[in-house]
Length: 121
Image: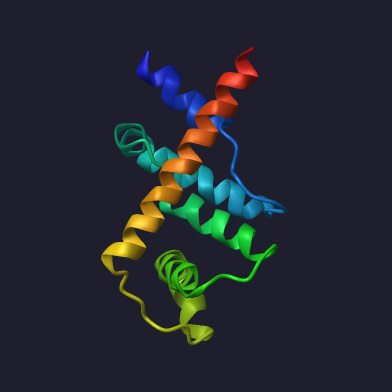
């Protein structure tokens, strides 16, 4: 039964955000495959999906310092060579920033699971 649940999540849970390029959606699915057990255990979306959500939100409103630092941290993690080219600073998240990132990941996971439940009806 876990396999079915994991598969549904990997393949059908939405990537939360607006105007997300297909290559980012595809990449997000690969990270889900790798982290699916951890996602369910911790009830959190992947860090890559958090990166996409922050990227998406930044199209609507400017990021404050906290969210900018989280974005840079994630961007450097997933796109290190591009981050170097852009000369983005190296960022270590403090406890508050880690908490905010994990809260976002929990919220994304919750929305993904709700969307899967709604699609079954």
